[in-house]
Length: 153
Image (cartoon, rainbow, N blue to C red; front, side, top):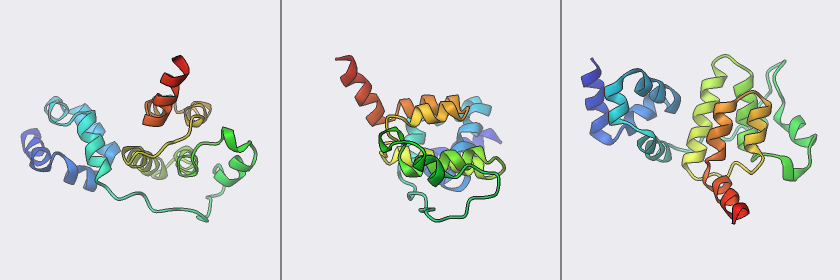
């Protein structure tokens, strides 16, 4: 029942649930059940994700046929217009569809929770790839937010 799941969340602030289910599935569960949403908000998700290990480096990983190649994309634009390499790799995996998509989102959540700077151009890349919700999340990443505040001052 929902009450049992909420009890599991409350044991360790949701960390165990996030570790097993992943950030995306945890967010979906919280959105589907009001009592979970009350027990597990965005701040709790951020804390839980920050305790997870960083995603494994996938440098040199084979790119599935028909998928966007992050190395080719990065080589096509000047360095100052590239997102951080792990973010770009995850964006490409996200666009490949299938089971790689949710795993790529989980990786991005964990990287951001650990304080990774996605780069000021990362939201633009996410929008260009049709990932508008992710672009909004990347715009709220700590360094991007700091740059916007400095630019407004």
